[in-house]
Length: 529
Image 1 (tube, rainbow, N blue to C red):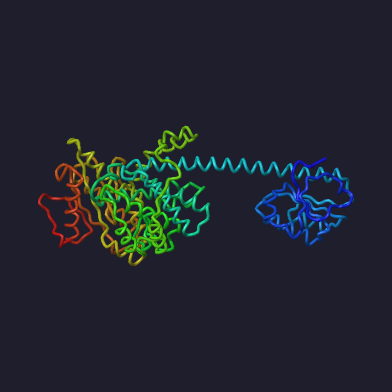
Image 2: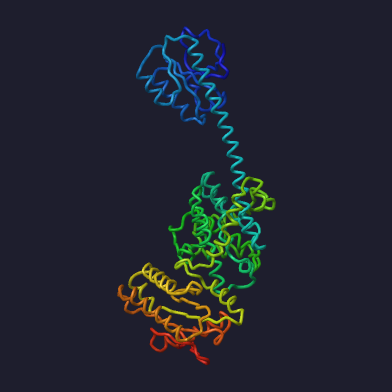
């Protein structure tokens, strides 16, 4: 009888079984090491008792620490020693046999260990193959998502894939392990996923963006963080999507993180993203030369970029590193995902498109509509000459006192509370928006009666004072309000904003804590503001 596998023998077999026809490879104790095991690739190891208890344990430890995970070790003892049996089994031996025993028993034990190990190795191979297929499918899926996002702007074609490749190369330079490099690549693919909720017209606009347009673009970080919040396979993916425009000096968005508050992965994607932006043509400018990029990287050292990241990126530039996609991006699209069993992903994006667009129109602090949404909705509403409305702009007087005396968190809470009061006291059809900073706008649709509008404004001001300002002791805070009516004072957002703003600063000039309806001819010089 022979075992169906190769067995490594160390030491001398007991006398009564030396006649058995084992498929053995005898190894001297001094030559027993991981290298030898890798060379002969045994299916089991026999350790014989003439090695001594310490010798058996030492060789067992070599097997345990080798790369041959699961390799069975059977200890053969020339007599029963319960302490040795307990110790070797505790240390991971597959079996322990003490003489005297029948040779058939040993053969069955060895054959069972060999069979289980072969099954284990086959399972390992199948798992490895499935993992390769899964990795390929993951890359296909994430590449398709990146392709979908980048396709919104012809200047961004391939951007996410290049950022992912740069990020992985940086991670390799920083000696991150293979698993971490792969995850950073994935996160680079997803860093701009929030742009799926940004209007194409803004992404492709030539020339400089207005402040309101730029505020809408900035929302892609908020959207991206929200989309990936439950992506538990890579918890840092939401941070990368949400924080990749943070700056180490604290002036970035949307959290204003600085220095070590920014995770390393985010710092890596940050500079990879910026480098690709500088080295490719954009709708608002042509790509920069390598020398211009070097100067910009140095200029932003410890300002926008972490100093270590700058050093690594400059090193990659010296090596003339060229990003290569793992897969051909042109061969993937959202529609192709169905063929890979990812129809669910398509449905996810289709179902949540409107929700994502709505999120891009929200102010990240208060949850109210932002200026971009307000402007588009007012212009669309007033496009019909039949509509009227009141543009009410409100500014918190001396708001800086709260930040200075109570801290910025207290200031943020006050803005949130003011926005909530405006929302609760307004009709469902009205548009309540945070314009920026401590300025808010309520657009009262189809409301033209000045007396009704004034009572509404008085209600806003009185409620905020009684419920928030007075209980908290914010005695210096008040509200100044300017009102413009449509169509009398304008029939577009900009016309109404300009005139309501003049009325607002008329109030500020004349003592604050009040309201004023715009009057034709009313102007306020900048010096008076």
